[in-house]
Length: 437
Image (tube, rainbow, N blue to C red; front, top):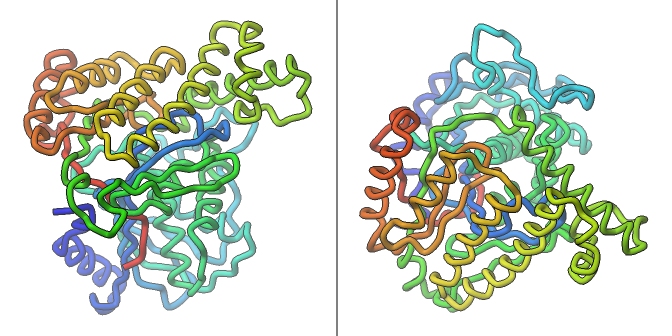
């Protein structure tokens, strides 16, 4: 079983039937967008500052089955949320986010959960992004969307995976040929402008550019990227490295949307403030206040001017950028041990310098570090909720998963009880990029 083994034939067949029922058409006509979740082994919290990051996809994610509508109608159902979402492809979409607001997506009906009421926001956001860039869409879609069965996707960038799935479905239905780099920009419009989240482009880039078995390395300032092949894949020989590790996903049981957590956007502001002070001190105040515009030697010369919390944010940025460079070398040379060590150091800096994380996540990170065969671990995603990831020796994956499940239950019985014990720790493989099949 490799990273290409998802989605399974039974998943595709089940979705075909659902979409055919919704549309009244032939199940053979159903098309699919496969949009994987991503992990970011190194490069945490530096994409919004123009830093260099690494990422790869896993063989779990979002599956959207659809057929083009006969008209402009969009009709969507979800495997996770109640109700149908309906709108027209020729409706003009306006951002839900208002800069004067408190960074939350409005709740349309207080008797339902916010997430449930708003699950159509990403589809409307995809239409907003396509319209904003001058694309004229005639055909809607009839579609059914769901995430990998039983997987708590928080911290794996399910939001970017969902946005990309809708973009690719609308484009396919309307015969639009859009490059992966354009779709990165379109998904950024969904997240930043339509929904008001101040994140960078790491998530979209990983989902759209990754290739099975490779590490995607991207400079978020220049948008240049490269795929780092492990040594055994250079000649197309898929031998040892890809089968020597697995990826563990350990959900914490904490759930909170990023758009409602002020911690995330506040950290972005603190990084910009640190950059502004450093640039001003070095006589370069004309540059945009991003830490990527601050040379490492300028940081070293003037870091004493930063108050403690800003100094920590800057230290995280500069040390994390170095870890990414070292990590790329470790991956290219096939050293999972060195690569894992850097991941764990990244996790520690996220806790100490970036000050993300909360007690359950930190406990989960520490448990993973003690698990048999684990090369390295860290939070996945923003680190204000969600899960931890770890790279583990393939031969130890089952033992490590069992160890983590049991240890976490001891320290967080209440949160652990909210997680399906069958899926309390999920063993994954590397995945491929988003695609229409």
